[in-house]
Length: 82
Image 1 (spheres, rainbow, N blue to C red):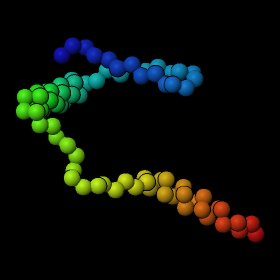
Image 2 (image 1 turned 135 degrees about the vertical axis):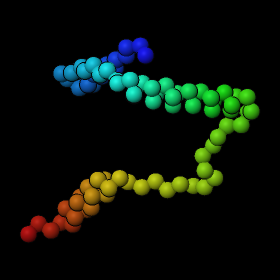
Image 3 (image 1 turned 120 degrees about the vertical axis):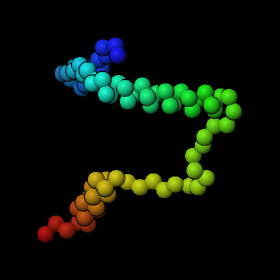
Image 4 (image 1 turned 45 degrees about the vertical axis):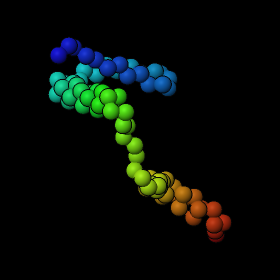
């Protein structure tokens, strides 16, 4: 495979920059997944049928860290200043 690098730059000062070189296994896996996605896209274009999400409404919940933060803030807001 061709030599590939990824440049990552922080968006905060001091704007550190890093170069990453993915291993061949990473690139092979990505190429395989890309091929699957392109094949699915081609089939959708050919058939006119496009996959959609589930036929039901899905629930969305807060991550555990956010629940804990809310609980801590609620506890602190109870006004117990003794």
